[in-house]
Image: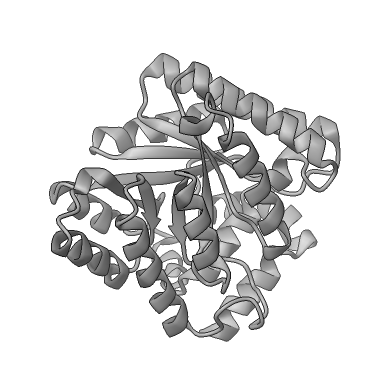
Length: 308
């Protein structure tokens, strides 16, 4: 399985295959299970359908590592449209943003200005911006930007962050963020990192995830536990029950198209569930990381590709 994971991560960076896939009907058919569509309207329709099933949504306009300020501003404009549409349609949805898409690799000042504008828009529409965590080369700057914006009282309720359980540093980062009252989405991690900074074995990542989940559940801050692993879900549920932590004080988060059965089961049990809905033309790297994370997704696609 580690070899399969490494192979899909490598494929996620293959530019010729990416160009072919993103412009081919076969590629779009393969990705449609995990990507809501190419347009804002398709994403909003998917969000409305998920909401009807009793779940919340976070919307992600796919794209990474822009190469110009114009691209960064264009990416931000999509999120501004989303915030307005969410407000107008009374959707229970927020947005997830990658700093590399907002131009952080071009200019820290540019990315800060763009994200500040998005958070201010979220403030005005009573919404929330989650800053996604990318590879370890972006960890420090992501934490710094979120901390700086969260320190402004008017922005504090409207910005949160993602932490990855497979990094050795995450416990310390989580403790600092919780002290500041910053909302966290906890995931296992989807990037290939060296053993010096990340746990190499699944059992170690699982142990870290469970430990961090318990810490977040006891923190008094509303966090999201992002996992499709039933063992992780059951561990969180058992701990919350043991400590009398109400289901309303946290949420489970899952990806669009993955473990729909588990999503619906949790809703029936009275838990908050938020579905992460990605959309857009630049879906290829995201799609490959989903296959790398969970090999069962590969089998699922092979079985269902020729079904209508």
